[in-house]
Image (cartoon, rainbow, N blue to C red; front, side):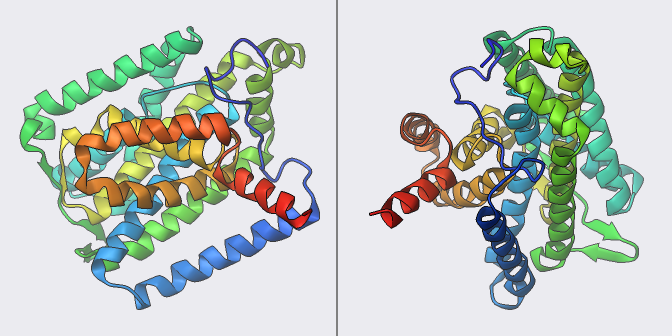
Length: 335
């Protein structure tokens, strides 16, 4: 692996459809996707409002993880500014609804484009660095943006937070988690499909070539710097879309929820699920999103617990939870 690898993390093993895979694994993934789609369809008929809120939140986490997957898992660039782009998406979408009265589809598109544009600019500057320096540069940007969220009172509400007007779809206002659920599901599914398309495309192959070796990628004629900046911009676009998704079912946002802890939470989801794996990013968001909800009552210990989980997985399951379970079941089947 090149000296530009993702710090201490293991080499990702992509499970994207663009790579050859055993038919049984493809069948298993197809069955899981069908099961997941069926669960999403029947869920609002079986559960209460709080469970639907958790489902909406998990779908937001899925989109956040897919964005981080593109820049870390696919391209191998270690970035720590995901919460900042997420916040930009929330505030952009919320302000477009509050001040301009824009309908939800337009405010969501604006949120993604603004976050993506900022990501392209930050990527063009930060990606002149590598390894720990890139991590520190993006971390500094994330901390600077949280300071902006906390102190730009006229726009963000500052430490008092921002009240977000209900999302509008034509003449319909989205006032409950149940009303927001179909919208959030559709957007999340579209972003999953977009991620698969990118991974199958020439762009996705370029990302993976850059991840393995900058020198080899340049020898193959791949514009390495452009690929890295594109991955950074796409990752920020996904975070902006996730922020707008959150604004559909939440009427309030506070800057404290957009700090480094959120970035670490999403990073842990991607690592726990398995770097370089779309399935891992989705599964990690669901599993660890539920864990984070259980830990909501112990906020003082969340960072410690997240750190311990990261260490355990890097030591004993470096390819992620699902690869670990699959290998364990294979060994058990062989006796």
